[in-house]
Length: 18
Image 1 (cartoon, rainbow, N blue to C red):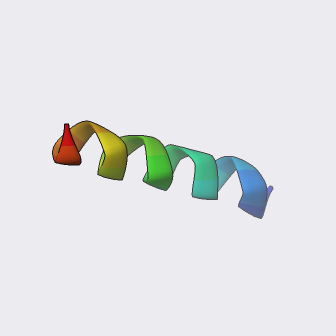
Image 2: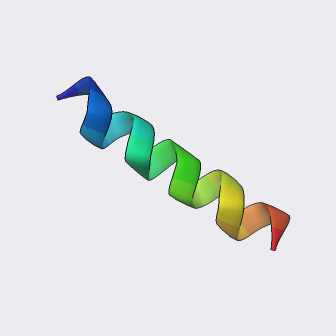
């Protein structure tokens, strides 16, 4: 379950960085 949360956080971070 943490993996999913991490994936979401990483996705948001990547989106912001873009």
